[in-house]
Length: 120
Image (cartoon, rainbow, N blue to C red; front, top):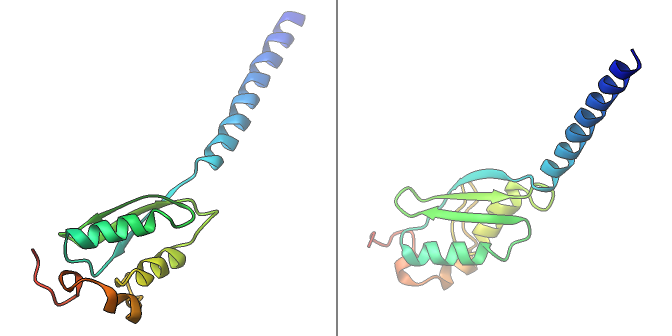
């Protein structure tokens, strides 16, 4: 009888330790994926956006598909927000969903990166 009680207590204890340690670990590694439509048109745009966003707080990874103009961003929601990410892309000179490109940054883009530039 005492052995069964000890065994049940041990199993419950191990289960609780696993449950709570797993929960705190996943919160530390939490990332969210966000897809943003951009005005990027070429490989230079891809490089500018990916390199520029690498310095933004909370960004874990970004990949721009030039064909679809979609930037897939993995980020830490404790350090940044979707609005902050869109604003950062805008400040690089590109549209980000409904946020228009920052006018000053857009004017500084190379001719091949302008919205009306032909795909190359």
